[in-house]
Length: 324
Ligand SMILES: [Zn+2]
Image 1 (cartoon, rainbow, N blue to C red):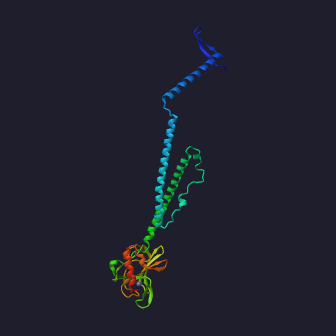
Image 2 (cartoon, rainbow, N blue to C red; image 1 turned 180 degrees about the horizontal axis):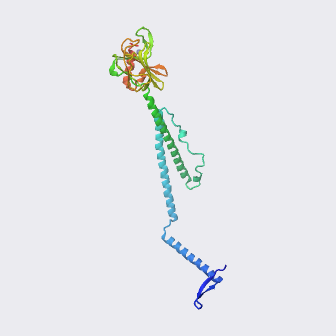
Image 3 (cartoon, protein in one colour; image 1 turned 30 degrees about the horizontal axis):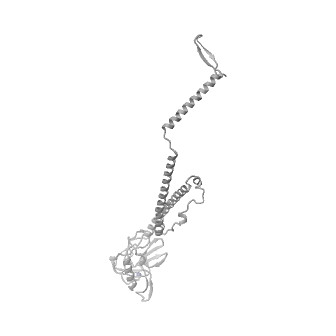
């Protein structure tokens, strides 16, 4: 349909329908194009005159500033890596050693992303070397930190179980020093006090008055209370972790603890006596590891400092008389 316009005719007081000529339409379009050009040009002029725009020089300055900042960042990453390395060394040489854990190998700690195409995109950019190097540092640092946190988690759990284990290893004397009338005589070959022949003495004797308190030397469950041939009234404690201790020649059958009962280190379990094959009031104390007798002298480490240990060792060695 042709476009039509209506024009008011004052003579006839009606609207006459008119059709624009080609020239009229052409000039209408041309007029609009000119308006657009003028308006666009003005807008550009305003933008050009009043809005600040960077020059090439400014771009270059900004670029070199960014580069400098990038280099500083890279150096600071080196410093962070050095601090982490120090932590790793302490972890491997101190914490992990203390808790019997294998050190984490150098290759595991420093495994990066070499050989992958992880940095390909960066290699296409300007300053590719700096970009790749810095990104590699961040990647490695991230990975090492994660590994370090894992290691500390492991150490925390090891430390807890080590503490638990330590509470179950015999570590004190079964009798208080102030209650000893004479120092113990020791483990090893001794003359039998009754039969007068050389015989292996499987424990340590602590001479003391009758009815002196006897203490559990580590956390344990009471395994046995009762009479044993030669040993007289006896208490055996099972400490778990392959450790057991035995307390013999006790006062009487009236035991302070009973089988199945849990005891903690230092808790009184019995009274000393002179029961069984014994030549005088004393406590005979044995330590077992995996069912075999060991020298109890190595299990007083919480009571004795180095000097006390030497002293006890000497007395136990030189003091030949045992009470069995
Ligand atoms: Zn003995």
